[in-house]
Image 1 (cartoon, helix red, strand yellow):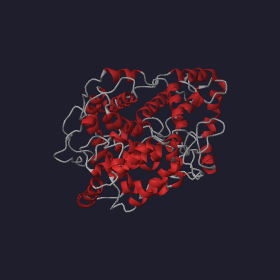
Image 2 (tube, rainbow, N blue to C red):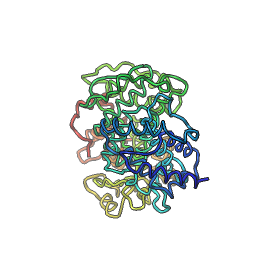
Image 3 (tube, rainbow, N blue to C red):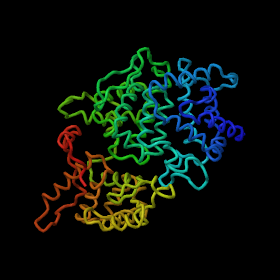
Length: 516
């Protein structure tokens, strides 16, 4: 059954060889993508025997194109290829979202559907591996992709610019799901261009269109991060699949991408903030609208609540938006269910969980991620505490005794004491209540507590706001310490102080980086 698909894939690879002039019918390619969606054995065979097909699809999507080349070249040729296709009776799956899409739009949709199948389907799927902490690229079995380089046919900046362009140009669920899958697999390489670069501003604009199902026309909110919003054609109307309804396909697709940006593999604590910075006034009402059209308790509902809370907190207290309005009841309930950040032990637990989930090298100023490892797998954990990772002996030795930070030589035995107090369960596998009990049983003196809590402020593991709250706590400790440095009370019983709203903090430290 898989071999006919392999033969078809070779034919498509040849038809897609010239990224400026594809020679295949858009509906034939959609029919092929439809076959891949539910054929695990077929996808595995293609990932093993036809790398050139995946490479051709990605090159087609990543190639830089001008409006003129699209209008006079690809649009016209794809129209003739699709309308004049002699295999019309074999077309299955049909247009992705109705019949009002051009062959060129259907062609792009088909390319993304193929890539999604290639990254999420088959044996040892790439998305399945990256969602496991100790898995990664599999370059020993000949499966595509063998490394992150296989997903970037051109440089990272150009590739991401192209994917964002497709999200803006063709509002379709496949482009958003495709970008989300791509980001989940290649985050260390892709996120700087999405989260901090100019394409991120355009992507926020596009996401707003997906969430505002209450509007017939496209949203024109003004400037985004210094760039003008993307422009849709004057004749553009919101297609039926983007209107409110039981499926809410546009909201679901946008939420998948938003969830990967904020919580995907290798996500940094402040990626959500950095991605939406300065776009809060436009994105917040769009999130509020979308919340009214998704089921409570769904993954989309949780994602929207998280974004609404973050956006609202940053708008509060800013001189430009002193009154951000009231939070919806669902968001208030979500806020009240979040991990305990008023207790320093609760913050330490959150830090341990986040640190253990990161697959990059822990050593300061290293910057290597799983994607940089020769094996394609996550770097090994510390054999004792099972919380931190190192890319090699040199970084491990440096982090063990680095005098500029709370080095691991101090932290590791303290974490092991918590583990021992919990019956030798790894600290990163303890729930919050179990962690608090084990912390109490470990009987740390105030100086050990100070060491552990200081550790939580040394890197971008916690959100910036929480890191500054912990710094304020540590300053309170220094203020009450005796002249000889003795700390007269347990830090674990203290409350992590409030320091105002996130908006106020941003305005106070604008231009100031996270404490090292």
